[in-house]
Amino acid sequence: MSDGNEATAMAIPPFTAGLLPERAVLRVAGPEARIFLHGLLTVDVAGLAAGRAAYGALLTPQGKILFDLFILAHGEEFLIDCAAARRDELLRKLSFYRLRAKVEIAASPLAVAVSPEEPSQPLRYPDPRLARLGWRALVEAGTMAAATSYSAARIAAGLADSDADLAPGEFFPHEANFDQFGGVSFGKGCYVGQEVVARMEHRSTARSRILPVELSGVAPPPGAAILSGDRQIGTLLSAAGDRALALIRLDRLAEAKGPLLTGNVSLAVRKPPFARYEVAEGEGKGP
Image (tube, rainbow, N blue to C red; front, side, top):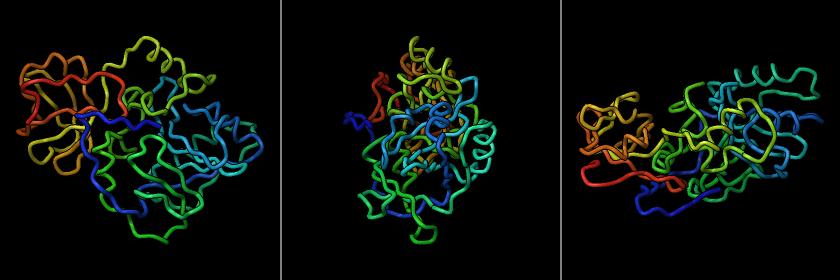
């Protein structure tokens, strides 16, 4: 887990405890569940202790994120917190890889909740990406109201969302900063897409990163180009008020001379608290 204290990082606004209706849960059990998931996902499932959780992904063979997810070790089974809109698709994909493995894969009736403080629910764990994002818990559906302002908090923290940002097959794990907050284990054996991810790590070829940005006004719709003069340096992703995420070309950001604009709105790129790479800043960049 990372939780740096960069001076340029945006303050993370408060959010209330409650359910995330856009999330759902899968249950993976059976005597070979651990080795099955370890051979598929980007994280070290083999070493995941009971009651501990990790954040990672199932990739395409080309090394791009197909599903991002949280995985909680619970006794001899694993509970996967994933996007509700894609839960059934993830179930089918895992079933495709199962072959003859002694594994049971099924949808779970549990719901996903978040809290800024440690909750009382037994199936709880601190957010494995960033301590400032508080806790997650798997709870009975309908037992809590929906959380408020959570999207604004995760955007300010620089964390992409499954539905709002990470279109399937569009992003390498490095682009979504998985290498920065433990979303990829570089010490484990093979998994789907591993060769491409390992090559990017060893060659330091991640030219683009998802970064938080501050805008001088309301953000344009997702997909809007971010320009410095007539040169595109990035693309806007999800937003909450005057804060947003953007996929930024780091080399072009470093070379930018004038203000950054998206539509008629100026913006400033911020370094997220977990980032160990350089994010160029200087005069004329943003409001």
